[in-house]
Amino acid sequence: MIRGTIAKVSGPLVIAEGMRQANMFDVVRVSEHRLIGEIIEMHEDRASIQVYEETAGLGPGEPVVSTGTPLSVELGPGLISTIYDGIQRPLTKIREMVGSNITRGIDVPSLDRDKKWLFEPTVAKGTRVSSGDIIGKVQETAVVEHRIMIPYGISGVVEEIKSGEFTVEETIAVVRKDDGQTVNIQMMQKWPVRKGRPYREKLAPSEPLVTGQRVIDTLFPLAKGGVAAVPGPFGSGKTVVQHQLAKWADADIVVYIGCGERGNEMTDVLMEFPELKDPRTGESLMQRTVLIANTSDMPVAAREASIYTGITIAEYFRDMGYSVALMADSTSRWAEALREMSGRLEEMPGEEGYPAYLGSRLAQFYERAGRVITLGTEGREGSITAIGAVSPPGGDISEPVTQATLRIVKVFWGLDASLAYRRHFPAINWLLSYSLYLDRLDEWISEHVSKDWSSLRADAMRLLQEESELEEIVRLVGIDALSANERLVLEAAKSIREDYLHQNAFHDVDTYTSMHKQYRMLKLIMSFYYKGKKAIEQGASINELFNLPVRYRIGRAKYTNENEVDVAFDSIEKDLDQQMESLVSKEVG
Image (tube, rainbow, N blue to C red; front, side, top):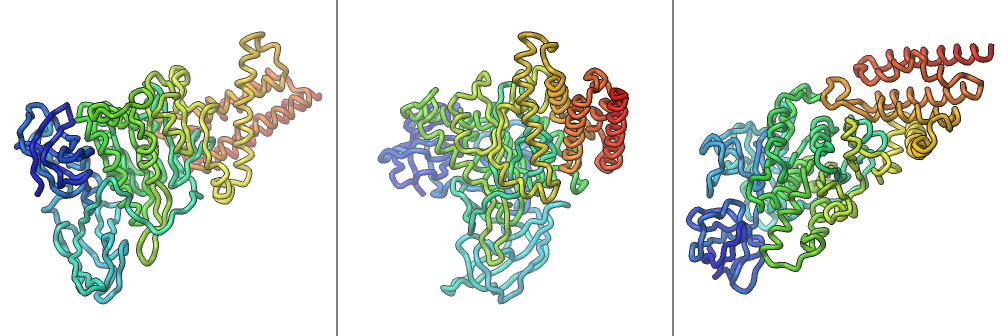
């Protein structure tokens, strides 16, 4: 055990002497309070330590002890439904022990050591196993089957395997390795957070992550295993977008990292998620969610660790063969923690004071997402989809964190303060945002939704872009200067904006829209445009066209229940056809 003494304290940064034998990223215990910290820089025998707890009251000469191991997370049954802080301390357990405020130096195991889990083996004695193979399962919650895997670096023959109720530390199996040594296997394993968990092969994304949010799924889709950024100014709805994705995204497991955001926003998550019913299972959403809460009033250094804690837990469930959605809210606060620690280390600052390695650190995080074939003889397919909120000061997306993020991610959902001001939510600007997964996902959408989806989406985007150009003309010379066809473009684009892209997160029906309903809605709006254009060519009055009674039904179509979609939309389409025919025949007559 390596012991040193404190030489200097600068906020969350502590310099310790006598640490020559210590290693980078070793976890250390600082002072008699045994505050937890991590070595982030070494100079001869002096170690720079970022401390994950309040350092008030520390002084030179106090002891520092290295544990000799890197910052790691405990992985096993008990992760789901638990609320952790940035270094995987269970907050509910801490509150039971010491109250609402975390006591300095408190040491609580991440996984409950006393709770027994019912383990059912899935392999027999004598089976040959290797790293990543599933040897048994635990029904962790009503919706999540926790698959117990052989830890990395172990392969051999199962010499003994048990069934029954065990704690996470008890031996459930014994494996004899090829060199003759025996290894006891427990349900819990540990993994260093800064090291990505290995896999066999990385695959190209080919299937969309269906979110139920129309502006996302239709115009700017995200692939399973993809990466997305949601930048936007204060009040533009970043957190609500993240909440919506966490609630409705087509993922088996959700890992939500509240990284440096306001405490009341995390409170909303903690209060709301247990009440929400999972649309696929009917159970509480918390039964497939892991929450990491590191709010803005918690120590700044733990903010930096929380991102890695979250992605490591996500990788663990990915290795079981699950599709995982990871939300990081927000990476700007994480970058600010990097900047603060960099400043205290007296490193040369980069743009706006951020460290020069900001871009590479962001890349290290986002590159751990992806769709993979896992280790193990059967090679399961799992994925992590990472969605990071970015909070640029003043909404300026030219600032370093946003720009570094955009160089890495393939989906950009740009939130717009002017849309939020007009109460258009989600306030994703359709003229600024983009998705580089469109071509990859078209084949899946054509097969599973409709073959004309791509053409409908392209036409809708064209109308929105034309509307932007025509609005400038209207502002200059008025709407009377436009032709009937141009006025129809404005009306159709308005319908796309208000009846399709605008979505109420707090409405029971409108909060989520299936891909089939999205297709029927978009087709209905575009049918009005196509048929309206033809009616105008045949001499129909533009004012009468805009006042057709069916227009009201089209606008209210979004509030149709999912199980009534086909009947209701067939009826609206029939009305549209009849009223268009009546309008044209009236003009011709």
